[in-house]
Length: 387
Image (cartoon, rainbow, N blue to C red; front, top):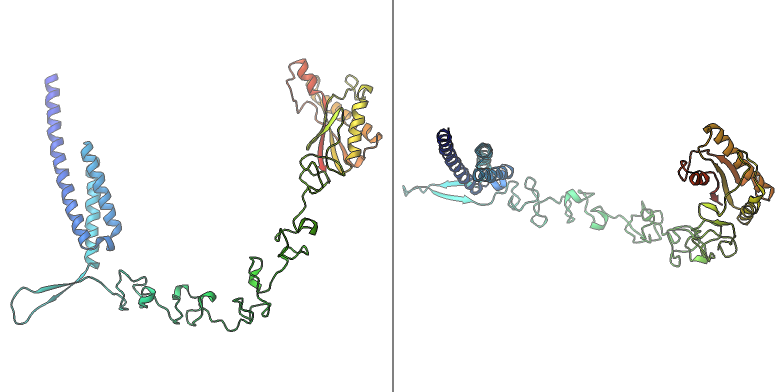
């Protein structure tokens, strides 16, 4: 059995060597044709075919070295087809040959090679001619300039009429104010455009681009309106507490006039998105009556609403999952309304308060433990807006 395997291995090696030798000879033939194609002008006349032939030849050699005869053969066949096409195309546009016969001497005809072709006969060889099929001027790379203004017709907005480059090759009939806009399209022909990037196309100067009454020369923010007190720049209110940043000592904290800093409360804290309470609001068990122990807390919430008259708040009630969900939703709604009513009695504006009951839908802790359920039974005061 091992003897048969050895014979088979030897036979495969002989066949591989034979195939490999044939592929190498094919690659050498393709290499020779490539050199002929390059000399014949294929780089200019058939660059794609030349590149495909070179690439497939390289791939074929790599596969030969790797012993992949099938893949090598496929690449070499592609290379042969491409180099054949490159040779055909290069014959059609290669350097012209002119044979001059001397009448007296029977010697072999002399061969004169014309290196440069000038298809459009404008004195600029095609290799250097940007417009090889259209007669043009040498100074413009062989491209035409119909009106003689020094601009290529392809770049000239008025190719039949000479004009300056600043006017895109079109004649400038009259420009009284010298802003490069002709009087017939200049809305202010006697006042030059200021060229500051703002409505420059109308030809009129714009001394106050943002229209805030402060001329651009002294406006620190010429594109954004603002009062003269801030040199024409807009005055911001980052924390939306109604006290503008230029007068707000705490511009990133919600505060009250006159300094914009937050007031200090013992049981609550005003944040950007909510009135944070440091105690729970307590109700009678399974009912919505607010217990007296929570009155001091709610009194401070009411004080916040009076201190911030532009604040709109959503009073939101939440429960745990004990009991039916529908009953819990109703209970949370009733408790939120009871808190809202208490705040209104303490002077809060009812138009700036709303009450919503979410039941058990928004837990903040696990309902599987008693401490978690206690946290979920809560009342929150979310700030809707600060006007």
